[in-house]
Picture 1 (cartoon, rainbow, N blue to C red):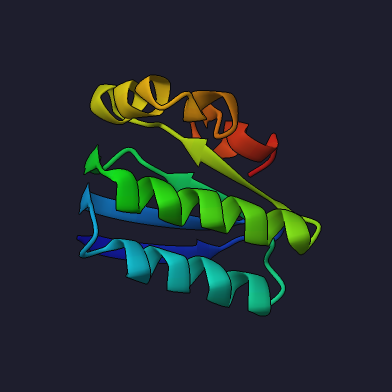
Picture 2: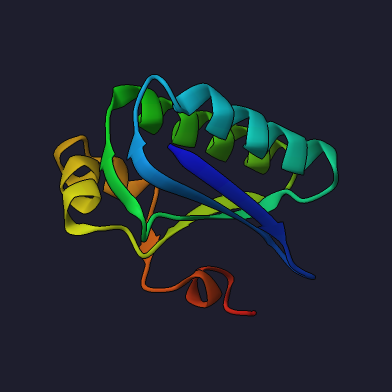
Amino acid sequence: MNLNVSTHPHHAVVRPEGRLTAAGAPRLKQAIKKLIEDGNPRIVVDLAQTEFIDSSGLGALIGGLKAARLAEGDLRLAAASDSVKSVLKLTSLDRVLRDHPTVEAAFGDS
């Protein structure tokens, strides 16, 4: 899994590419933790290039959501593939981790 991180004036974007599984989940957790520590608690996880997510990946997202909210921010998803949406729906996490059509739509700014 490749992981790209970028910061913007009002939010940060994390882009996992490939399969988000137990092998890559710790890297995602660490990237989110570092963003929050650096003062970027508003995070969008762009899932456009994420082919698959397992329970470890879901755990990393939930952990990131909790950490962001504790830092008075939020973690939102953008552009999830159909397979990722399916996993979110099956686990009912789609109620907590809402998917937005684009990164820009996630926080309503660019």
